Length: 364
Image (cartoon, rainbow, N blue to C red; front, side, top):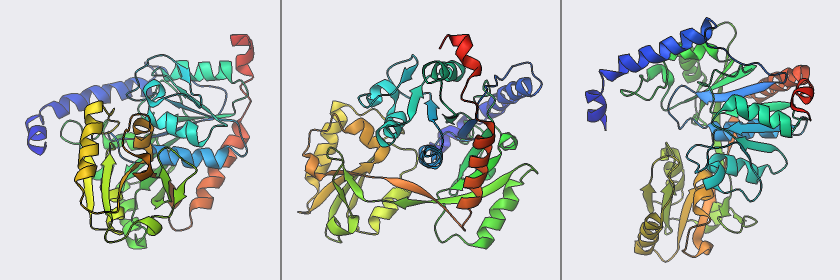
């Protein structure tokens, strides 16, 4: 893969020039950004994935949904449909995508919608859910046709955008200069033991602008959840020990932290890694089953991520008694959670307008 990227290195300047011209066109007003009369918060990154957008979007849902009518809009990456859709409890990952399905399953009381045309998606949400008070745009940092009130840029502690390069040489969708559009920069997947000195080094490398703040977050792994019976939650310590065999199945951009976490319980971790958002086939299920059967330990389990469970739950044929997913939640480091929360809530509180401007336009 590295050799192939080196071969493609001459394409990086061309790609960078195209993205640069596009951003200039937005900055000068040649390409227009649409403003909507309610708070819109964008969560995204500069890289191609793996920075933790879904857990951080879920964090914002938890933060805001007790006070406001929240809607989430995603493009529904790799779904089999193309039109605008509002998720229901019966929507599958094939219809709306794995991440929107995960959010709808966890937060059934909010609006979760998908549309590849984000402007059209916002309009449809305001048409069908006119009491919406805030919209979260999932993975939309490069989608500049909508003018977000707050843009949150995520960057992985293990793969900072400051050390990355443009596609195809690196993983950046646009140049590092794009960070200037962010109001908040969050360094994700930090080790809980990260020091104040390390945080200062990272902050200096990012070179914040006057309007920007930086935060650091880590993941907290929660109890294992049975892939079919989601009322069944088990502390990993109660079922995993040094003699337990684990088949880890992932279709995410960066499974290394999860694999390392499981190795804290047992060295017997066998990993089947698929590409990010991989749509599992019958052949994949057969390979997973064979790999699980090949594990010699008497006590063994299949463990996957919450996102992968959205695509696996309906097609796994092995006994669901042994298949679990491991949820995660975001934790702020150095007691900065309250500072972040207060600024988000203050902004939404002072800018919500119940979308009344759209009632006449759409005949609601």
